[in-house]
Image 1 (spheres, each protein chain N blue to C red):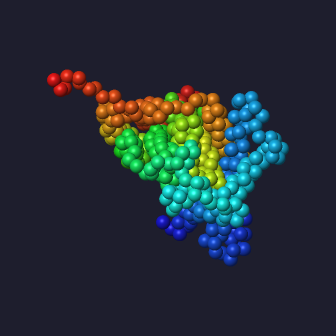
Image 2: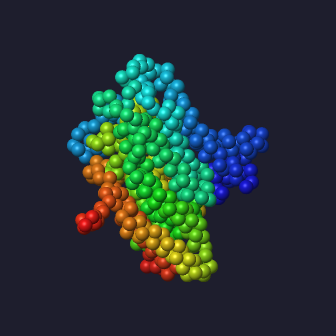
Image 3: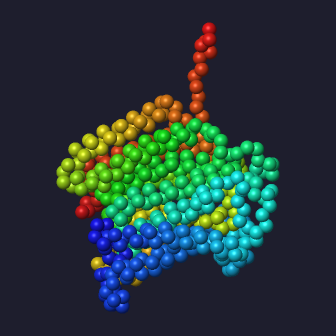
Length: 138
Length: 372
């Protein structure tokens, strides 16, 4: 990249810097203006007036983890599709459209198989239903 | 890198005069121009975000046949300033069990993630801060920081309501990112590039050239994008992370004063960004319906107005939807995303790809009226 091109990335850094400045500035202002009367009861976590029992950092439902896993698969696959998509028009104008379409469709079919598998396994259901056989113990 | 604000302005005569004033130091001049425009855009967006809260209350009042805020300033329009002052003067309370560093970090991350997206938002054909090659991809990537901040905010508070809200928020935001990304992919496919400049240059002229009307699949993709964007910005009917009837206030239950204010500000600016991106991708952005060969600054300002009009119209729809539809259940939320929107989005993508090959990239309007 030439220096002029790197200059183009300047606004991104600036916007992030302004966000940080705005945040710290707002904090500083509130430090000057806001009252400060701390008490133990005030700084307990809100639990509708009851004293909180235990910490909130406990084991949470595994469904969130499954959603995260499915997301990563789809995210990576959509990232891999972006380069194909952005050159698709160019290649189509060159007359290679059908060939690229075949590759593209075969890639998408893997994605579709993935979602079909998750669907079949019931990972897309928030409330899972199991078929429990009653005759298991007999 | 296609075009930046500075490279756009450098075609005018006043740029050379300015360059003379800065002693031929191009880097310093570029720095000054960027700084001024960044401050202007941040100011504009903060005002839009502030007025967004006012619009939200006023429109909801209209829908529910109430009056809404009408005390501060004419028609209560200065309400957001009064709210801001109130938030600064409120005591800053942090739960003693909280993770202090992450508790501070979370609203800042939200603000950084939202502000950084403003760099590629195309206000007009000339006024794009930096028209990156990877424009829309960058936008999707950097706006994920908001999802991180939602989860961090919920986790760091160490309150059960916040934790539940944060977990729900994280799972919802990452889930709805998939249909949004795939809808954006079909537009990338049609435009043949990821930068906003390329995307907008394919939508010049009358509304029939917009990608919304390019083909039936792009038409559906717009609605998939819009529904997904609603969910990504935690707007009703997808506002489960902050569902007040079940989770008190969700991930920002423990946030008070200024920090809560920054969360709210980031959320309202993000809604505007999402609407702006929708306007740029599907509704032609700032393109004017007629062709003018000359390129002057006033024309650019007209384009900015057109872009703002489209984005704010979508903003109105977002608020309208919030006050019209009831909230979804968690399982409905997940099944809408994974069982309906994602397959529809993939179907659209395949449809767009096939359309490109079959009709050689022509839109319906081209086929009917025989253009190009």
